[in-house]
Length: 227
Image (cartoon, rainbow, N blue to C red):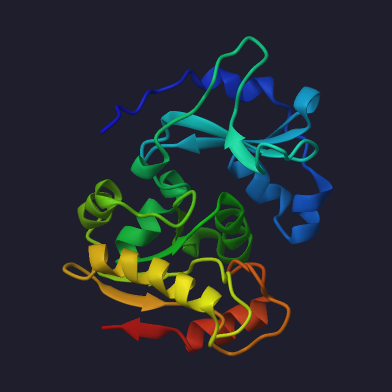
């Protein structure tokens, strides 16, 4: 288990709160972007995403490359002087500092892959947001422990829909990912899966906030309990 390092928060002021049109068009509000301290690293054309712990400690920084995506869309922030803000992504949830109270209150959490989904869910649900992002689709034991510490009872797995048809090999891979998470969660929680089981078209690789709000509500209603 790698130790989480706490970084100096003054770095946040280094990135102006300039918001990329892509994210505004996607439907994330300025209020949400401001709340989550999303910034802009002009020199590298990157959206900057600070990652906070439960008490608001700065545990890392990620960036979304808007120009040079050769090394991937998302990566740890690295400054010109070589300082990197990387962190063990399997030890922390994105959004926990803001959504913890509501998760404790409702004893429920929606687990998603990326930060962008948490941000759009904040725009949709405000104080009632119970989304946490895993920086991918691996949950791991450390984070299961964190969910137990918050006395969570209900978990909604909402991974990106990396499939077009339900009777495809892609769907089998998707199912495997979900079941891998379920194996870790099953001893302690009630678990549901939210995915495109209604056959919405052109939704390849969609996260749950890529759908319209109306479609999301329909998918929420048709979520399936895993037993």
